[in-house]
View 1 (cartoon, one colour):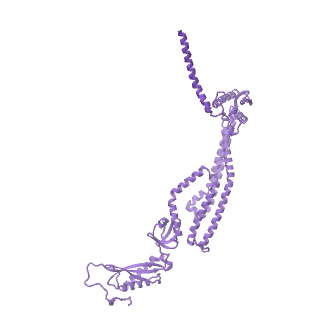
View 2 (cartoon, helix red, strand yellow; view 1 turned 60 degrees about the vertical axis):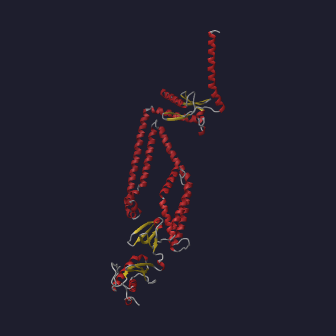
View 3 (spheres, one colour; view 1 turned 45 degrees about the vertical axis):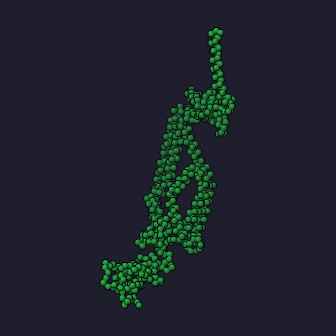
Length: 545
């Protein structure tokens, strides 16, 4: 075999091997793709065809080996060339098998393919073509206008005139606001005395109320100013061809916003009517309940589960519960209740209440416990801890007590619920308040004489009840003296300290009249004679045998 034949066979074998490998690399993916039934489509991004800042139409399909972006750029360049070349720029259409062709001055500019229409938006080729032709004619006219210096100068004049008119309207608006605000301030100033005697003096003051009265007018003036500025911008942009699409979009957005606002109001009317109905029904129920509890408080109505003292707090509690249920029932019908803003506000309010309401809830529960257990009532003389005085009010959060020093003290209800409370008035209605005073006298003074002098002092004291009668007790026999306790009954618990002061003064007078010292003797040594009282001195005056 010759060398040339061997080389030919070798080259043939290498070529065959290369062909086999290439077939494997190409056919295997194709077969695998065919077996899975999947395709590898090319994802095309839509491209906007614009001319003179105006959108013509959206290209969604690829042309002849060209993406939508390349198609849009090529068509834009062709249109610029046509405009620069001049001519009537007449736009016509021609039907093609693959779509509709758009022609300018007998020159095919672009094609609207069937794939350019978006069926999800209800579009078809003819609808997209009509819109594209309309936009193209407008854009070409605006490009001709851009090359016309006379029309541009005229647009500048119109823009200047619009600026002067809108500026004059703003000036007149704020001059009118200033005049009307001055009249409102003068009116409020003339009625300053009436306003200063109410909430205005405590919240905002006289000057604050005067300025507050003009806030709605100022807000209206600013709103009208913004609308005038928006209208000026729309007008000025609309005078110039290149910015006219922006003007149309601004106007369209304003009209869309007003339309959405109006449709929102119309859609919200049924819900608002239901909210109003809930409000009036709830208000009627609250008024009926108020009349009922006012009757209980005045004594015209008698029920077993509430009395005169708890009628007012029970009414407030039930009123709050009824309004809360009314708010829950009306919330779904409020405009925007399902929006994310309302949901965010609800979460924020719930978080704030959960963080800060624990102490308030504790105080309120303690207040309800005090009210319905009737531990305290207004007008009763009590002692809570070291505070002693007359209860003026028992609220949900705190209780107010007026002391004998004419001090008004607020005590949190949680503190009262966890403290020992002495109510001097509750049992005083059934026999008065028992008060006591103590003296210590040496053993050399007859106890009968001491007892008689203490009873004499009690008889001289005004404001003490005679039934039960005052009583003297020997409460302790100390090492050097006897402890005597005088028990008396006081008719008015609020005069406790005044009665004790007068009683102690009368005790001193009685002892001084009979030559008996009020003292607590102490010994350093035993006396020479025992310190006793002879029998003949047991009934020294004023003691009676």
